[in-house]
Length: 176
Figure 1 (cartoon, helix red, strand yellow):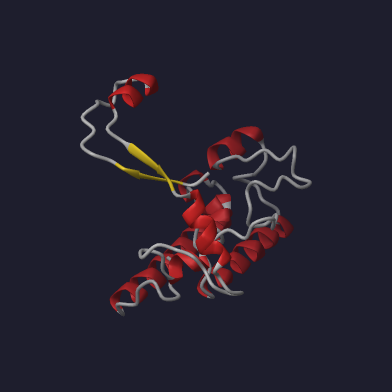
Figure 2 (cartoon, rainbow, N blue to C red; figure 1 turned 90 degrees about the vertical axis):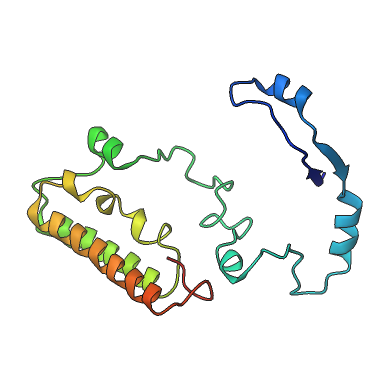
C-alpha cells in the first residue's frame, strides 16, 4: 500500500515512545495506492513516475532490483558474509596493517586503483573507492607503503573533488 501524509505541527518531544507519539500526532493519512497504480498503468516502456525533486543523480544512484550487486535485499550466495568496518576487520584479523608482502601490496593497490578509476568514470565514491577498508583510516596502517598509498588515494579524491567543485559542475554526471 502506498500512502501520502500531510503533517501539521507535531509538538511531541524526542523522549516519547512510539505509541505515545502516534497518539499525539496530527498526521492525516490518505491512501493513494489506486492513484499510483493507475499512473503506473499509463506509463510507456522507458518512462518513470517520480516527484519534482528527482534528478539525474538520483536516477544514476538508483538500485537495480534483483541485481545481487546493487540490491542489498538479494542475499544470494553471501549468506554467511560478515560486514566489518576498518577497526573491526583489524581486530578480527581479516586485514593486515603491517608486514604486508609484495604480492599482498600489489593485490590491494591494484584493487584500489580499479575502484579509483571506476569513481573517476562517474560512479559513486561510496560504492567504489570507499569499498577499500584501507582508505577509511590510513592512520591505523603501520605498513609504510600501504599507508602512503592510502593517503595518496585520498589526496587524489580530494583534488578531483576540488577541481570539479571549482568548475561549478553539479549533479549532471558528477557523483562525489
